[in-house]
Length: 356
Image (cartoon, rainbow, N blue to C red; front, side, top):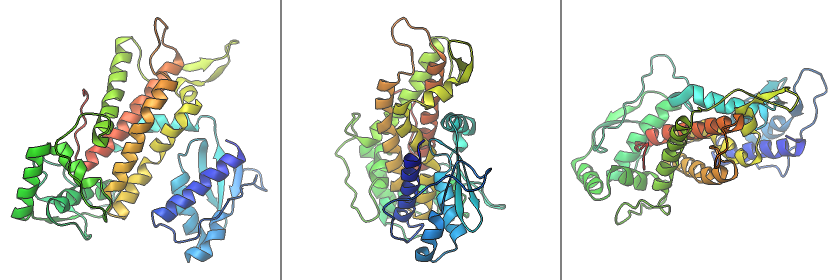
């Protein structure tokens, strides 16, 4: 990562914090990063938090912590630390992107969750076929009717995943229950939930006439992308290899890193890696703003990034080729992508079909 790339990455984190209402500041035109004056303070440093603190009306270290959380795990950044009154120190690493893939795979269903505080309980999972049942919801203004019920139920899980307090329970009004049951009967549970969760709070719900299993349907694209990742892993096993793999080596036998590191270093993988890295922030933002549509859009972006990467970087050998370490690494990235899609779908109450 060059200083210019790092500067753009930090700028995106500031813009994201402003868009998500974590910071109320003018977004600067550019952000300067320089090598630190003292050794042992990372590869680059920035005083952006100190510059934003006055407009934000908050201590610089608080601003720095907001940006640090957003930057942690970004492609090409190994570590972000806060120093002194609020400087951000960045340590870059060639294996940082591969480490992200390994982190997602190791965390599995818990990737994206924040640590719950003592005494707080997890919310219950949705009951199949019954999106209108009583469910845990956060204290927040909700929509009325079927939309209110489905949004509240999803927010209960999202808030819990983000480490929020224990939500309260509310009962479904009979009219809303009947409305929701009618939608499920006409569209199916997944399509009904997606249609009610996808619009932003101020936008109207547009119900399709019928569920459609094709690319124009964003719900189908997300579920299909998940099913595709599962199919890739199954096909890899059929060919006799699994995700990850051992180290790649040069022609002289010098180790250059694992297959995952090699796959994560490919330019075509960067968009997908960034979406995996920012998934926890998407969950946190959806919880804090009581806006499940933010998580929906993140899943759609992740699903839409998968086909292009698969075309540029085939996870499976082509033709009679034998699987290499980089194929195992790509398969690990595909599996990690499936993990993120599955985790997000479960928070929304949408099914995760292995075959589609």
